Length: 267
Ligand SMILES: NC(=O)c1ccc[n+]([C@@H]2O[C@H](COP(=O)([O-])OP(=O)(O)OC[C@H]3O[C@@H](n4cnc5c(N)ncnc54)[C@H](OP(=O)(O)O)[C@@H]3O)[C@@H](O)[C@H]2O)c1
Image 1 (tube, rainbow, N blue to C red):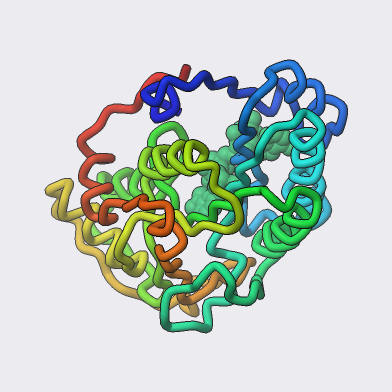
Image 2: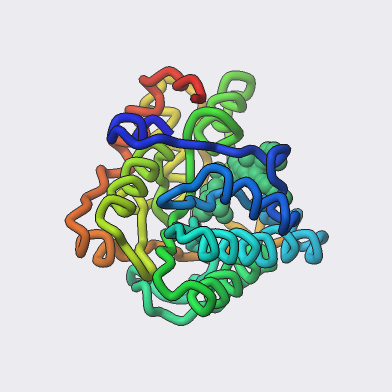
C-alpha cells in the first residue's frame, strides 16, 4: 500500500500463506508479532458467483475469518478497519445508500459481509467499516483490464447497462483508508470514487480513453444470467467520508490515472 509509506507508516502485509483467516491461532500470532496500531482487513473470498456454490467456505473466510481477526486485534490492543462492500444492499433504492440504510444482501457474498459487519460491531464497537465498490487497480483481475484484453481481440463487446455503481481505484481507496486511520475513524464509512455509472458506461469510457475502435453494446442483466444476483443500484453516499473531510476524485479521473500509471512494486 504505497499510500501508507508516503504517510511515514510502517506496513506489514501477511499473505494467505502467512496467516489464513480461518486459522484462529495463526491470525492471532501474526497480529501479536507485528504489534500494529491498526489492522486493515481487506482479505476475503471475493468470488461473488463462487460464494453461491461454496456457501460454507464463504462464511468460513468472510464471517468467521473476520471474527478471528477482530478478536485478535482487540486482544492485541489494535484498532481494526474492515473493508466491506456495496453488495450488503439489495439495490432497490434509486438514491445513494447512506451508512445506516438496512442491509439486505441479494447473494451469499453480500450476506457474509453483512453478517460480519454486524458481528464486528458487537465484538469491537470502535471498529471502522469501510464499504467500497467496483474496485479496479493493478495487481490482479479487474474490469478495465478484462475490457482491454477483450477489446484487443474482438470487434465488439456486450456489457450490462442496468447495474449502477461507483467504480473505485484501489490507490484512491488505499489513500482514504490511511487518512481514516490517521483520523481515528470508527463506525461505517462509505469510500468510493465520486460519480456513478453502469458497467456499460464504464466499459465505454475504458475503450474511449484507450483510443480503441471496439464497439460497446448495452445489454440487460437478464440477457447474461449469473449464479449470484447483483444489486441493480449500489451507489454509496459520500456523506460519511466527507465528515472526515476526505474527498474522492471522480471515477473518470481515477480511470485515467489507472490507464496511465504502471503497476507499483509490492513492498
Ligand atoms: N473487488 C471489488 O469490486 C470489491 C468491491 C467492494 C468491496 N470489496 C472488498 O475489498 C476487499 C478486497 O477485494 P479484492 O477484490 O481486491 O480482493 P481479491 O483481489 O480477491 O483479493 C483477496 C485477497 O484475500 C486473500 N484471501 C482469500 N482467502 C483468504 C484466506 N482464507 N485467508 C487469508 N487471505 C485470504 C487472497 O489471498 P490469496 O490470493 O493468497 O488467496 C487475496 O490476497 C475485500 O474485502 C472485498 O470484499 C471488493
